Image (tube, rainbow, N blue to C red; front, side, top):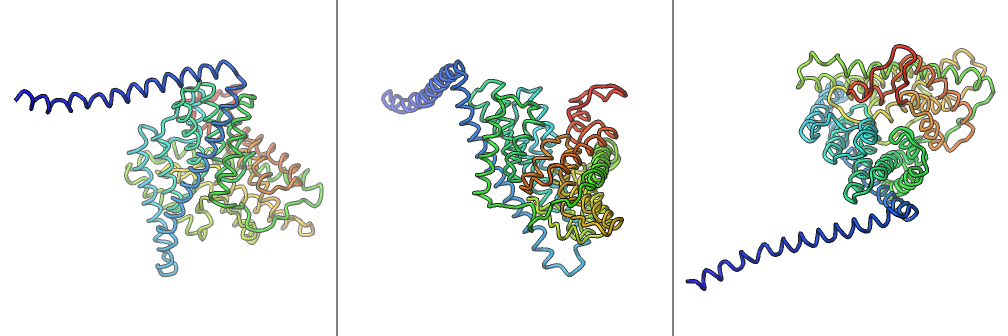
Length: 478
C-alpha cells in the first residue's frame, strides 16, 4: 500500500521540477541578456551598430505588415465588391454600394470596440503622443484591431488610406521589439519611428518620404541618434515590399510634368497653393466638426450604416472614383478627361467621403485621401487655367502631381514629407521649384485659416494638446 502510494505520488512530485528548471533557464537567460545589454550600452558605438541591426529587422517587419494588410484588402474587395457587382444587373450598384459600405463600417466599429482594448482606434497622432508621453511604449492589440478594421473599411468601399494602419502597425512592432529586448527609452522611441517609417515606405515605395515623415511627425527630431536607424528601416522596408508585392507605381502612364514658362511658377502654381490651402483647411474643419458633434444625436448602432450609406452613394455617383483601393493608383489621363468643375466637385467629394468614413465607424489613414484630393484639385485648377488661357500649353499632369504634394503637406502639417513624396513618385527634378513654392503657399494659407492640422486636431480633441490661444499663442505641432 505504501509502495503504491509512493509510486503514484512520484510523478506528481517530479512534475514541478520541469517548469522550475525552465523558469530558472529563463531567469538566467534574462540576466545574461541584461548583463550583455549593459555592456553594450557602455559603448555608444557598439550600441549604434546593434540599433542599426534592429532597424533592419523592424523594416522587414514593416514590409511584412504591409504585405499582409494589402492581401486582406484585396481578398475583401474581390469577395465583397468586384464579384457581386459582376453578378448584379447594371445600375444596381446604387443600392448595393451603400448597403455594403454601411455593413463594412459597422463591422469595423465592432472590431475597434471588441479588440481595441480601450482605444478608439490607434492612429498616427496616437503613436506620436506615445513617443512623448509614454516613452514609446505601444500595445499590440489596438494596432491589430486598427489593421483589421481598416482593411474591412477599404475593402468595403470606404474612403480611407492604407498608410495609417500600416505605419501604426510598423511603429507598434518596433515598440514591441524594443520592449522585449528591454532597450532604453531613447532607443525605444527610435525604433517606434523606424517602424512608422517602414510602414509608409512599404505602403508607397517612398523610402525618403517614409523616413522624413517619421522624423518630422512621429519623433519631431532630426538628431543623429534617430536619423540613421529610421533611414535604414525605411530603405529595408521599401526593398522588402518590392520583393513581396512587386512595384506598384502611383501613375499608370508616363508623366510629362514639366512646366513651359516662368509665369506658371510665379502666378499659376501659387494659385494652386491658395486652393490647396483652402481645401486642406476645409478638410480639417469638416473632420473636426463631424468628430465633435454631428453624429452624437444618432443612435450608436445606426451611425455606421448612415455614414456608410452616404459614402456608398458618393462612391457610386463618382463611378467608383472616390473609393480607396489600398495602393495609390492615379490615372492622370482619366483626371485630364474630367471637366474642371467635375474635378473640383470630386475633390470636395473625396474630402467629404473621407471625413464621414473616419467619423462614422470606418477606420484608416488620411495620407492617401489627401493625395488623391490634391490630384483632383490640381486637375481642376489646370482645367480652369486652360479655359482662361487657351493659347498656353498647360500640362494637367503637372498641376495634378503638385496638387498632391500641396494638399498632403498642408493637411498633415508635413511640408518636407509632401515635397519628398511627390519627388519620389515622379523622379523628376523639374517640378521641384513649382512644388516647393506651392507647398509653402498652401501651408501658409491653411495656417491662416486653421491653426491645427489633421493630426494635431485629433490630439487637441482628445486632450493631448492645450486649447489654441486666440492670438500670439504657441503654434501646434504642424
